Image (tube, rainbow, N blue to C red):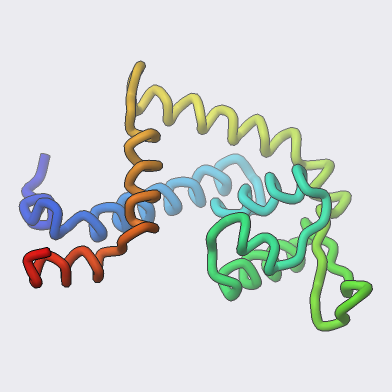
Length: 161
């Protein structure tokens, strides 16, 4: 493997390494969908899966369930609506609020997309190997980080707490 300065940084390079891996996975996913002739983006599976489970959600509800920012969900939903995968309707109680549902195009394509996602799950499992605890470790990291973030931990260390 080629020399990698970021790896040399150890824990200081953690965020960079996670971002780099995430970007590589998204890029590869984009190439995969293009190769398969699918007109979707790698992160759209989140909205497809949410709306399959909940039928109809607002941007605020989706953002809350995904722990994403409101603007990032708006961007995703707008692109999916333009591509014909989402239907948007004004909320009955608040006309400023949009509710989204899967369109007929989404429902027609969903079985094929799910087959791709299932294959992706299996390929990823093989990447980590039998008995991997990576997903458990990742969940623990997310929980611990939500309780005390990088800023707080670093300041505490500087204060010798």
